[in-house]
Amino acid sequence: MVAVYLILSYLLSFSGYLLYKSYIQKRAALFQRKAFLYAMVGMCLVLPAFILPSLPDFQFEHVAHSIHPFNTENTLTLQLEEELMTCYNMAITEQEFCKCEDLEQSGLLLYKEDPVFNSVIESKWGISFFFIGIAFIILVLLSIKVLHLLRIIRNSTTTQKHIDGQTYYVLNYQGNLLAASFRLIRRYIVWKPELSKLSPMERKAVMMHEVAHIKHFDTWELIGLDILQAFWFLNPIFYSIKKELSLLNEFMADAYAVNHIGNKTAYASLLIKLKEQQQFGALSHFGSSSLKLRVLQLLQPEHQLKKLSPFLVGLGCILLTTGFIFAPPIHQQKQAFEQYQYIQKQYEQTGKTYFCKSCLYQELESCSY
Image (cartoon, rainbow, N blue to C red):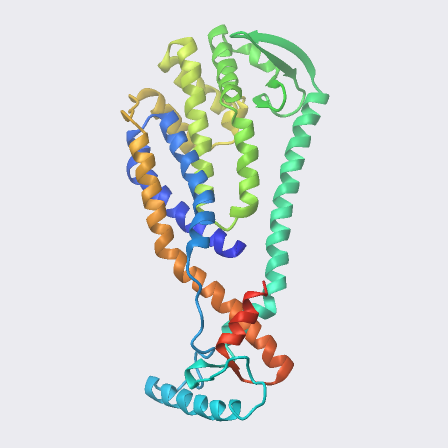
């Protein structure tokens, strides 16, 4: 069930992000774009849990996808009917073959090996350990990042700075990071003496940029995304969402800084100067293309949707439609695999290749894989 849930959430994220890229990205304000992405991720994680339990159960007509690779469809059907009749004649002569009062030929299920399902069964535990291992590594790396932040706090000289009625702990850090910010329990800003070479306005701009990251809880967002990555690391859309949120965080921090210094052109020039000198920690993680996007974002007028709620309702409808289209075949394949796995186990234990459908499915309902 976990695999089906994850696959469906991947598909939902693709539909949601397609709507974001096609309409929301260029027509909404920064905070609206971020709210839309948050809502999309939340819906992708919640909706599968409601869609999947509502799907009807699926039952095999027979567990046989092919008898011989060169058989035509008519020949295959004829051979199955002949084999089914043979098995039926054998079944009705067996004592206590099943619990049903009247066994009909249509109530019989034949077992045939499926090479695809067999390969999945053989590698099932290896696949499970692979996924668990990758998720564990991601969470360990997250722990290392948090420990690194704690090490920065421990190895820095701390001073307090009061901005807009809130207390910030400014860290005089002697490492390679010259300007950064993060929020755990307290609000921290990494600040090095080299930044004193900037003008008072430029120093204020850098400080306000870092304050904005703290006010917007960007550190906690990054931690949440790392936790989500432990489950979505095979989802290509996740990395696009993560990149987009990171860029939005920079856009919003830039806008916050500009509001405090009141000069877009001067701030854009500061970004370019700091990028050239590689003195700004927030910029050192982005390439020239991201810097260009940030400067363009500053200089162009910002759009804003009148209301975001209709688009969130539309997002929910699109995701539900996508879910109910793709969930049944995914759920059917999952149940088909479970049924095949159970029947194969019965075959290995008894050597039988024919079973009563009704009795077999009743037994299967009490088992879980």
